[in-house]
Length: 266
Image 1 (cartoon, rainbow, N blue to C red):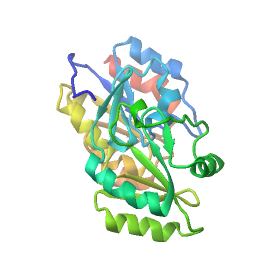
Image 2 (cartoon, helix red, strand yellow):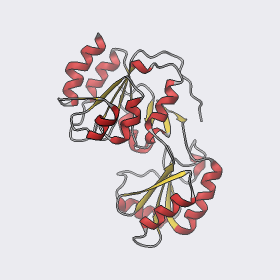
Image 3 (cartoon, rainbow, N blue to C red):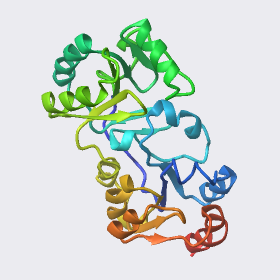
């Protein structure tokens, strides 16, 4: 795993949230973002999506800067990953013992998933949480020591609430939440997109040069750590209230085509 290294001062950085911003009711045409890239603007995403779920988006050449994934757990630039915050190996070994006896589970790494049984695989596939599943034989196929996300389902039907509460009580370093009908998503406690941004800020990008465009409450802290904070037209009112960001009165695509490009050109 690489340490944080950026050699070149970036003039302007443009970060986008994904779900509800780049992707949603209004899907942004990436050719517009390429116009920014051609003008020397560095572009990345800041999303709760894991590397697996962000893979298709990041294939586009317009994303030429660091992207913040898994709500700040990991950074990615080109094909290089930089761990920001994850379970320690000892923490994960401790929690995994509990999961083995009480759940069917899947370990999600940056490049695929390991299932603890064929039954876990079948259940996860039926859940349709992911449209495509890459299966790894073992953790040696990953560059990470421990998974980024653990997906677990109780062996007892409809016992997700009790299992979720028990994981949070037993393992204070973990944050377990119910995702979908029965699956439980387990990630390190206190992760946040802004934590990933802070690692980038320690390098050589200036806060005043960063733009962030987003829509939800999980973007509040990220907004508080940038100078140019912009909420899309359909953004959550709590985001606007708590971050003091500007809300667009037009579609994001129109804003990118007409207004922001002129502002950046100066």
